[in-house]
Length: 219
Length: 219
DNA sequence: AACACTATTGACCGATCGGTCAGAACAATC
DNA sequence: GATTGTTCTGACCGATCGGTCAATAGTGTT
Image (cartoon, chains in turn yellow, red, purple, brown):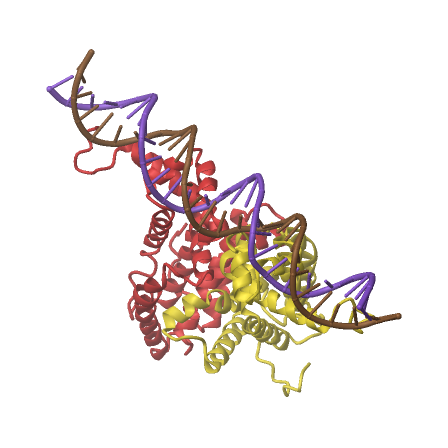
């Protein structure tokens, strides 16, 4: 045994697991749970199939582990939002954070999308539990903003869905977007252009005047 | 043989084919091309597996036939749009038409989404050909609207993607939406509410003054 | 060197995959 | 009723599926 007494994970084991998770994320995100095969994941990871099962136990365990990993990345989004917050800043941050997450973890985002398309067999509890509460609490705050006259009286749930869909589109439909634009991938310039477009349309569309505050180094 | 001389399709044959196509659309839309099995399609259709292949030839032929059928339904969208058109009316129609298509053909929409997620192996030609031209021509007209001062100077491509994503979200992520809302399915009231929200935000966000024309009794 | 434990993997399992095929069942024409 | 062509389907094929296992190789401790 190696000296890693506190944790049961050795450095080498951890490295291999990351290799497998990364390979599995690619395959699952393209073909969904059923469409992905352990052999394809093994090939992608450059390991024999039996080795995948040795480290991950089963196809299902590997899959839910990927889902959990992806969802933990979203926890920070819209975390500190209060009725006193500036809607312009919060929504603008929301848009940029979501867009960044999609660009940073494209396979994870697609994995999530495929899971939802399949009817969310592994995530139904999460959707109708944690995430539902998350949306409800944020919606309540946004509703207060409307009552305070900070923005138009729009349904906050539709607003949240709008931002989700608009930002996710560019990662999950990347094949469509790049096919139509005729480029291999979105450039940094494109991404910034898209962010500004979304900020412009959504903020203005919700009747939120652009924040005049000196955009202090937020965060 | 029946009397259907002009066409090689008998009424009975056509009925069975529709049954199969409908069953296949459900299975493919949930699990993607690889994840769907002919046995599952056969069970869904209530027919023996060999019968599916008798009518459809192969899994791949069945799949591309479904893709083509779905895409033909989109042909009417934004068909007659000119530089003289009223942006408010055109975009409003666009939103409602897209939303209606998603509601009318939810499985077909999900099928398309799964195909894109997989990297569009069967649709890359369509995306970088037909659809690319479609977007380019519409974008050119929208750009003219901006130059005429009818609306803000936004990138028309991002606008088109925004409307696509926002409307498709409610069909392709229906599992997420209903899970969060806590309902079984979206009601007519919800749908109308969403349409109005999208019209409000997108038109206003693009600086399009609401059409004062007598809003003829659509719907 | 002996021992204990982990890591690795080829071989194999029953089940299911997409697809073929021969022949039964059916229908229409003469 | 015999003939012809279409429809239908159980049985079967090789390949691949997720998963098991025993044998082997490697590593750390004593």
